[in-house]
Length: 135
Image (cartoon, rainbow, N blue to C red; front, side, top):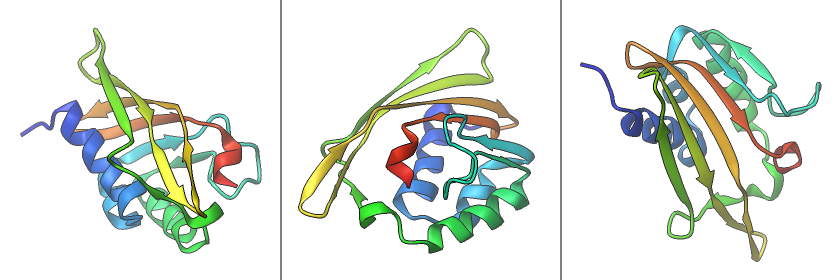
């Protein structure tokens, strides 16, 4: 049974941003899946490119163990997103406007993610966000 873009996106966000569960995050990807953050500079704490489910699992587990800037948590009531389907049924785009609470203030962010799906799993995800938010 194939998952919808909505189901894939929500599963990915819950595993990553919400629960910081590297095992669950990695299981959203195909065995040879690619997770890319093309705007990240080399040597940044957040990885620029990971190839394969096991590398995604290992590197993201280490990343989640680190203290994230300001240790902010997402505010679901103030955050929003729109999913855009494309003429290719295996590609969808997420336009995301999350708001994070912490340190006595809130931070609004805008980002775009491009998903390429194979057999209901993420084969390639390009995550475009401002790198300074992850340092």
